[in-house]
Image 1 (cartoon, rainbow, N blue to C red):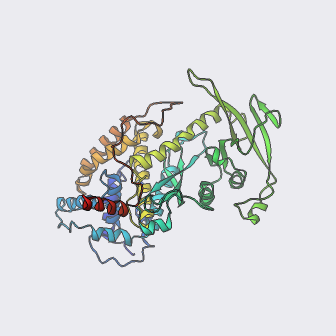
Image 2 (image 1 turned 90 degrees about the vertical axis):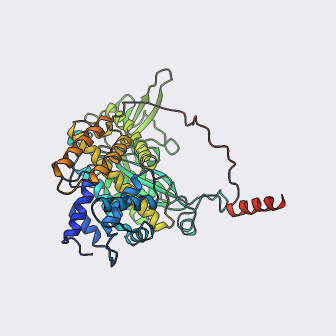
Image 3 (image 1 turned 135 degrees about the vertical axis):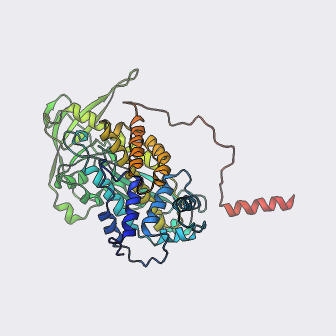
Length: 473
């Protein structure tokens, strides 16, 4: 599509940028640029006959759909009609068919490329004071999402094999790479829930090109794998994770002693790899030099609990044991970021009926998430605080409250729009999260569920039995 020189196209880009504070003299205003959107749209080899739902309008309506509490297409189209009427344009049809067809025509690459670019641009422009010892740290973690029980979704992302057909929902595994400094999603992969090559480690290997020399990967005990650590070390990427006691044990009587509970050891290479191509595996070194640190987690009223952190940061003077302890404590941010993505937006239960649209829906959530993180970074930059101290849910609530006023602001109302921007950032910066180290809560709910029986057979069978009971009575 050759729309980059069109005045209408540029106006639509400016409108989309204004919704997420991407204009004016604010920081981080290059996340959504005309150039990146133009490059993403060059892959759209489709003739757009509909003059209402252009690619950018469709993207804007889709973003509003995932941000709103009502995720239905009907509500999204209704908001679009309200916008057109308020700007003196004719009202389009309230039917959702044209909008759904426009979403279907847009390729998945458009959503993924814009979402990745938004996350990468935000991370590249963060304040140097937000970095860890001048290094960019990324956290990696995975989760699952479910989707409607359709034949297409079941074929691409089958349900749990322990569930009977008709009772479960298609389930997909996702894995995301988060920036520790600003919380942006740098990359995301998705695959089936189970099967060979469908693990989080397999998805991490597909993200190898995302890392750059000097980066640090922070992960849980699942990432404590010799192969992954060696592959990333070849790229100049350092590793910090928890020791997986199921595979190795730490013996602090061996190796080069750096201090109490702190030493350097060499992990030998295995004879073969079950998951990595042997040609690549043979290029890896015979030994991997790592540092093991035993740290203690103290909680008032409880016995101290110790764990071992493994890292390829070998300089004990530059990266002290205390530094590694505090860095590993920050790994919990990956869990919080996944919760923000799945629960606050939310993305845990998707609504699209086909695998292609499900992937587009996921990438739209990622784009919305990164744009919200951008607004949070703007507020943090202006008020000289760290983005991690700002509430994500508070930012979403504030942005949803201000966006109608920003939307109805005309192009010429630059002064009023800047006034709204300033108050929006002030409100977002005021919603802070407390410092809660070592916080823990029981995984239990106080509010009781509704007293309905569970559906233990396919719905059509249950309806047939209900009909028989009614007819017999």
